[in-house]
Length: 96
Image (cartoon, rainbow, N blue to C red):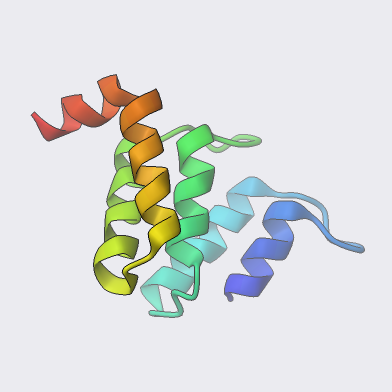
């Protein structure tokens, strides 16, 4: 599921980029516990928004935190730090 979501997110031979479909596939992978990067990639889409997918810093932060908690993922630690630096108003408002 993760690999299909990745292909749909980035496009590939014969597969058009469809960010909303990628979000749905990542959500499905997370729901089915097929994580393997799904939370991290979904958080990336939600951090910036993409092709019809709205930016959602609150959800992105929670996904990065789950990646850190469940997988001790150092990339998620970096991205979470980036959120605090670049989107501190959104991140801090959610924490208060």
